[in-house]
Length: 137
Image 1 (spheres, rainbow, N blue to C red):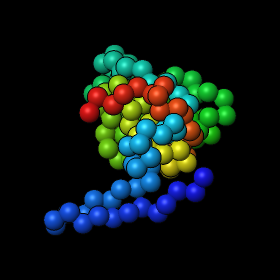
Image 2 (cartoon, one colour):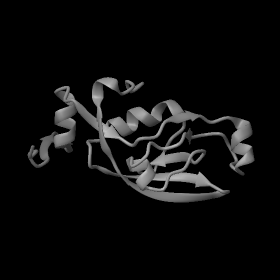
Image 3 (cartoon, one colour):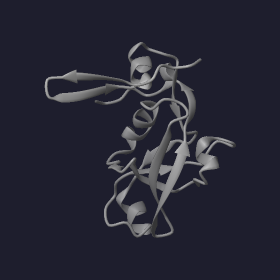
Image 4 (cartoon, rainbow, N blue to C red):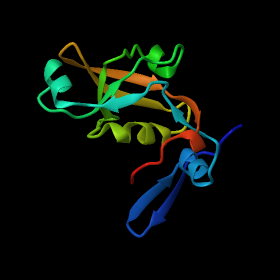
């Protein structure tokens, strides 16, 4: 299915861009962004064991085989600390933020492994929106 180009709407002095993904999500479409890995809570003790100064982000479980996460070389116990440069403060925010993107969107994850920060580019797959956790916002 071919989606229309983004539409820019002038509202006062502000520009609001309604992308096809935003319009589709607003209509309750069936597909949301999917990465193929679960996120678990970060603990102070686990953060310290990884050499992190503070416990934030989310701990990844093992990626599903042949998932976007697996193709991006994400491993179990990697910690995601940011999505597209925006810090991930709580593990609960990970899945809703990923689901808010359209399938085939490229996202940039900042992960932590072996006491170093690693940037990863991930092209999202498609998941069912009705099975995704609801965003707390």
